[in-house]
Length: 476
View 1 (cartoon, rainbow, N blue to C red):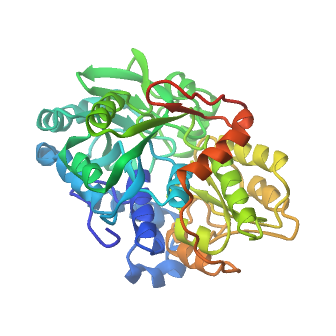
View 2 (view 1 turned 135 degrees about the horizontal axis):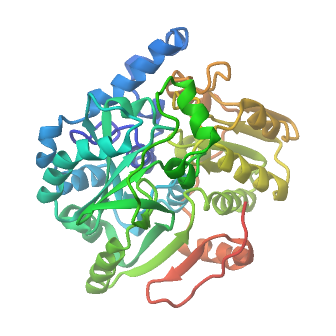
């Protein structure tokens, strides 16, 4: 799918879309250039950051609007079209396993090591909106009801999480609604792909992120979520805080907090959380076809990152390759091809926020020292709550024994460094060192590794029948 176009309204720059494209190109023997941006845009990188900040912000806002659907067209969206687009990313060839479920860059690097595809449960649909104060969530909810209802009526196999984040996503939500669509059933396209490519007796891995969030039920299969995973807590979104008041003041809002709809329950987080309805359908399909199901349970999107980093490090050592190069990748800035080609140990972070910084700090505290550390910062164009400072990230780079540096990042422009999306790919390609691309790890090699590290793995691996649970411990 490297050059294919996303279905109308499906965000091409979302976590799921970018990760599908990155892994699909990897399995075709290709890198993921420019994080999916057009090659024609690459020469513009130096110009973008020279523009006034306000101009950059407006351009970023309208880039989302251009991808979004008009609100009266959501009834034309079809989950099967999205499914065909996802499966078109991957070569049609036999696979010993397939991964299904939650988005996570660590999951993508695990799939790359195993040489298998990943089919996301959640995709992001953008819907155009105007004339509503973004700091009035109740009004935002009302504005989304009509297009949401039309979409759900046409797609009984989907649930819809209307997500509104006026903190991290402040620029984009000025013009678009974020409809997170969660697949409750595999559907024809995904079932056909599995039947065609998964070997007899093969394994279906379910990546189940248990992250939940307070939400408000609007209708059957339809909830509203204020905020999302990042630097602010659910309590701050819902009840306010000095940090919320300061954010709104920085952006000239006439509000001091968000008048949030009253939550009536904790449900899977819109972007990262796993809806268990899909698990039931996968179990049905697997039983009918004789496939094995293995569940991977984790609480946060980047909980798997320490495990996957250690897996790569062990893999390199067994191949006689220096395993002292750490490549920290953030959100959609993910590159499985060049990670392996340069013999780099991948460590994925969900965003450039304080909880992610703590995760990397803890990992570096306990891991054997790295000679070389390279790190990307994801710029979302907002001085948001909980954004980790450049100085904090630089302190982690300074822990490298030989050299540490930012990768494709203009720290003076961060978090308005939109040129990084164009600069990142070239920076990864220029990393020193080249090693042979390996044959994929076998499932037996994965199990042997897990058997050794199970006491310090912060995730659980469970056979679909509940047998073979591996214990969970503390991780970075």
